Image 1: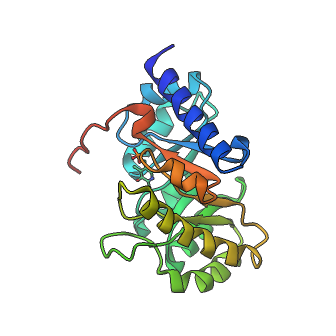
Image 2 (image 1 turned 180 degrees about the vertical axis):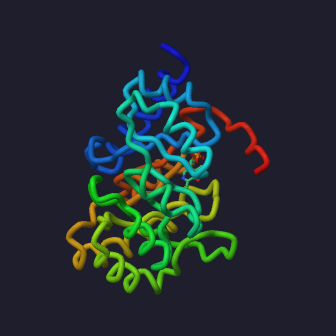
Image 3 (image 1 turned 45 degrees about the vertical axis):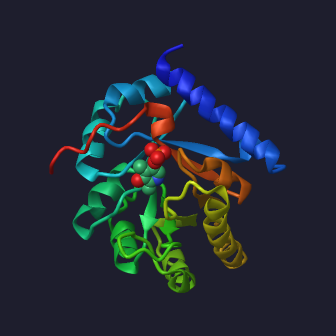
Length: 232
Ligand SMILES: *Cc1c(COP(=O)(O)O)cnc(C)c1O
């Protein structure tokens, strides 16, 4: 097995074990391989090992890789901070956006989504930890934002996403994930299209699965430590 095939396999085993511990079916949890700052060849290797969904955070870098990998049937998810001037490129080249945190961005994505493509799947990013440096809507604002985003014709509102405050304490990890889960459950009754709770990364996926994650976003546990982000 190549290195990426074996790390991918260990992540899948972690998912299965965490799901069993939580009394859940491991198949109800999707794995998004976060390939930001990794070369196209690493994505090719992961695809050869069975992975089809990839997450990217930087628009220019992602577009170059999407172009280089056109021959593969990959599903691209945008998970990074999104500026207004990049919304058209994202709406044209991605299947999902996890980081919608304001109506203006959602409107622009909907307007720019090509008619020939299915509606763009979106999750609303919630700033669950209240850190000023973090993107995401305030928890108190998410219900109104969800109502407005659900009306946009070219978007399909799938659920919520959060990046909690980093912590090595599993109890603290779970406390933050539980807060997102409660918000998700409260909105799910109003939004029949909700089926995605996007939370959990390399170091806290077990806690996320214990709290109901349906999609985890894993980078370094699959691809190894990321090379530093190049300037610009
Ligand atoms: C980088 C990133 C990840 C992956 O983090 P790892 O620690 O490499 O697993 C997940 N989600 C988002 C939003 C990210 O930016």
